[in-house]
Image 1 (cartoon, rainbow, N blue to C red):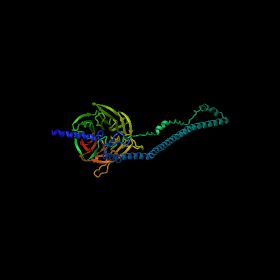
Image 2: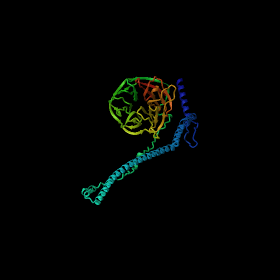
Image 3: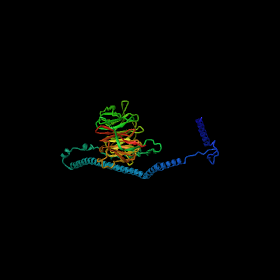
Image 4: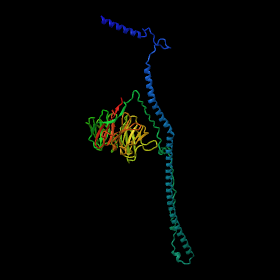
Length: 496
């Protein structure tokens, strides 16, 4: 009974408490709006709202406002450089015009020289014929003089011995008329002249999405480790291992200076081997958005695709040889290539086998890449920049998706790196960082998306790094050229 009374007392106390707190049952009036008679004013925690305002202020001051300032500065810089850029353009056109004038003068002078030679020949023909006529005239005069002597003579024998030359002189020589040479000017085809003079490339507007890493970042933030860690070493058996590319399931394709392309799992077991038909080692390999293998055969100037075990031609070049390739986030294919004589280099973007864009010159008409047939690995960054490791130039060249030069990286000063910077493989990670192999100095350079040096990966006992790739978890795979090994390296961690 005692326990029951306690229970009832507690129950009634709670009920009274609820009634007292409920504005519909409580004798105490609640806060109301001055403008409203019935609506109850909602109460909020002033401390929590101070917190929200401070958080917004911090994000506006430290992140959003500086980002807009950077965008504004960039646009102001573009506007400031606008007149100078167009002045360079018109100057280039004027120089082209001057060169055309020089070439036209050369053509005119050459034609005048030809006319002078024709004139000499013309004179020789007329003088030769005139000499022949004058010789006949001299004979006629001699004959007339002989006839007069006969007429004056009283002797009969000269008249008897006289032979008439009228028949001989009556055979008149042919009349020579040498016509003057003619200059036939060709009509000026203005449209053709315009196309021959040069080409004005239209405005290329590349729109870049500006992402702010606020409360909901699109990708996880990963920071660089102080000391990169060697996860595993895969022995490929390739002679002079050149290329590696990652698949979504964590496996990798590899190729070297042999005609076979091998696929390994993370444990280093061979999953598949593809033998090239030509017997010549592939210049480069990549995986498209469907997971199909692509590879380059420079000897046949062809990009091949392996789908369901069948090899088919995807791209075949004419007059140019393909070097390296990569697949973009949109599924396009970027191919570096060089001319047949090895004096020019360029990048072409393909959609399937259809050419979409050629990237070869900067805004001043100068080549973006060194003109030779040396190695030029290529990759696309997360911001759609196109990054080329130009080995011969000792430079990483980065352009935007429209082909406009962004920046060049020529290495980082270091007392421990004694050899010149000569980049081979190049790849990017989820943070838009760029990683490129410096084989001669046995290290990897890590750059941010603006080309600023961040750090080296020069431990993990790397020897002669060549091709590189990064998987979906930002694990780095590095080819060791002479050892034939692929090293998997962890160099970053999630920022919690």
